Length: 487
Image 1 (cartoon, rainbow, N blue to C red):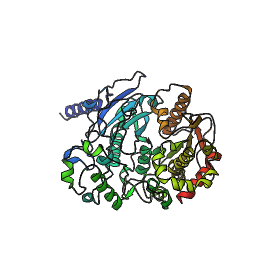
Image 2 (cartoon, rainbow, N blue to C red):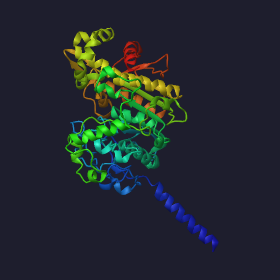
Image 3 (tube, one colour):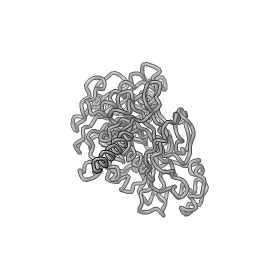
Image 4 (tube, rainbow, N blue to C red):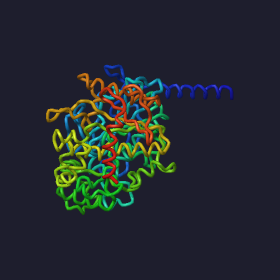
């Protein structure tokens, strides 16, 4: 009798195991990449769940089979890039998307965190382009604007950078479920551009993100950019981060609420009863709150501290050659200051001044925001023991004033998510796809040839988007000047 019992039990166990291991049935793109779109990773942050941490949800196979993206989180505005792959928006937006070469193998995982100044953008990308290089690509949506970053005084003591908490919730989902899609849960790279890169850097120090990834790529991060840059360059303070300390964040929130037509002293209960569109229609700049949880005032010290944050196997960061293309809104209010610095700037940006003053001012401001952040981040992660790579993207994408100015901020996204239409974009995409995927696999990078890792005192900035090797000699005087203002 016992023999019969154990025989039946083993049959039940083997049958259930076979059901668990049965490969998922996924649709394919025209490139032959399997995909799953619009998978919920957290409960809808609506009603009484607005301005609360996300509630993780379990994987449900019934969510598979969607051919289009689920709604994006509500932005301040949608540009053509945001609507390229769907323009539906909703407060119920915590979804992720997956592209995999095969759900039956084990590939490195790359989780994309989109940019958009924390108030625009979405995870609607052509992830199959990168997935063709033997990686599983995941993209996600996270709460934006005042719906995602809301330091209300009644929430004191809590982490009110809800957008960051959403990203961590998505990473928990990936860690728990990506093996079903052919991903390796022990080899996860997070990567992003602009606000997405800032998020990547912030997550490396978030206590709740420890163990959820082991590699990171920060494309045009501005983690070290002073919040005072947009108000007065003449009042830069030492080691400021981009973000508002809690007290000033709460004061700014009251001002923002007044700006959109409220009194600014409404209760959370009253604010949760207002339609979400009201909060995004007229919102201004969004700055995460420096609360020493999801954004630390001692960010770089924490990176170096073995007992603080996530210690990475490898870290990559870099900037584009003309990050300051869209800096007029910062330059114009500070024009007197820029003019007072003309002689100092001209010694480094002489060629740019020969084109146009604003080109020179923009190039310098872009360096101060993005290039310097990359160098400071590279140095910190190298000191922490990670293998570090730095790059300088200089694809000829913008011609202005009759001159070629290089690659503007964010334009290198074309190298990841759009099919190339000319030789310039084709080269850029080949550089990005080959090296980003090699990075995820833990392989040596190649760039235009050999790409050595970065070392303090012997930096190596690999040129991408055009032929060339090390840009260190060109960047050294620019970085030295930017650092002198930052200090």
